[in-house]
Image (cartoon, rainbow, N blue to C red; front, side, top):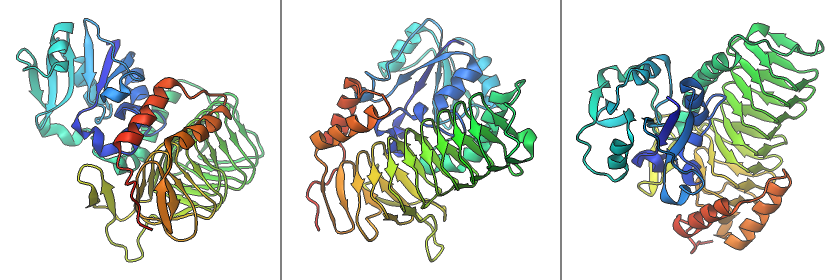
Length: 402
C-alpha cells in the first residue's frame, strides 16, 4: 500500500483558520502530523486531494493501486486492519461518509470527477464507529492529543534505545522517557508518571525547566529556562517555548519564548506570542465556551468549558497581550495593545481592543519573508499565492469600527 491519498471532504472548512494554509493531513496531533501517521503505519507516501488553491503546493499522485483515506479519521489497529483487508474498489463507510477505499486508476478518475461510483462496494462500519477516532473541529486536536502522543511514542520508540540523559537531570518514570540523538537537557525535571515524554533530535531543554507528560518536543525545538510545561502538550519542530503551557499544540516554527500562560490552545506555524502574552482557557463563570464558526459566520457552542486560543499561521501578538477564552485568530494577523481583543479576529487584521484595520498584503508578505529568512527558509511562490488567495477570499472585514 505505497500510494496513499488523503482527501479533504466538506469538513475541511471546520478546521479553519488552521486549514487556510494546508490540508487537514498536515495538522499535527500527538508527535506526528496526520500524514506522517499514515505513511509510517501503511509504509507508503501521501499525496492530497484538497482545495484548488492549495493543490499546487500539495499535488495529487495517482497510481494503479491507491489507498484513499479521509484524514479526519486517525489510524489505530482496528482501522488499519480493515484498510489492509480491502479488495480493489472496496470502501469503508461510517454514516454514509467515506472513511477509506482502495481504488484503481479508472475508479479514482470517477471519484475526482464527482461521477456516480457504481463499482465501489461500500462496507458500513458505523456500528463500530466508537472504536475509531474522528476529528470534527480544531478543539478535537487538543482533546485527542494525549492519546495520540502515547500512540506515536510507542510507534517511534519500538525496539529502539533512548539516548542516555545527563545525570544532572531529574527523570521520573524514566522508562517512559525517550531522548533522540543530539538532544541537550541540563538541570531539568522530566516527570513521565502520567504519560510518556518524547524529546526529538537536536532539541534543547534549558536549565530549570519542569515538564510533565504526556509531552512531545519535536526536532530542533528549544524549551527556555524555567519553563513549566504540563501534559498533554506538543511542541512542533523549530519552536522556542518558555513560560507556562498546558494541553496545547504548536505546529512548528513558532515562538512563545517568554513568560505568559498558554492553555488548551492550538497555534499554527510562524506565529510569535510576545513577552507576557496570556491566554484564558476557562471563563470566570465556568460556562460553556463558544467559538467562531467559519461555516455560519457566527459563534457556536463547543460543549466544553476549557478552550484557549486558536491561531492561524503567521499571526503575532505584542507584549502583554491578553486573549479571552475561546479566541480564534486567522492568518497573518498582528494583535497588540492593552485590553482584551475580540474573540474572533479575521485574517490580515492589524490592531487590538481599541480597533482594527486591514494588514496590507504587501506589508504582511515583507514581514513573513524576513521571519522565514531568519530560519534560512525562503518564502516560495506557491506559499505567496496561497497567502494572496487568503487575503482576497477570507473575511477580512475591511470596514472596521473603532
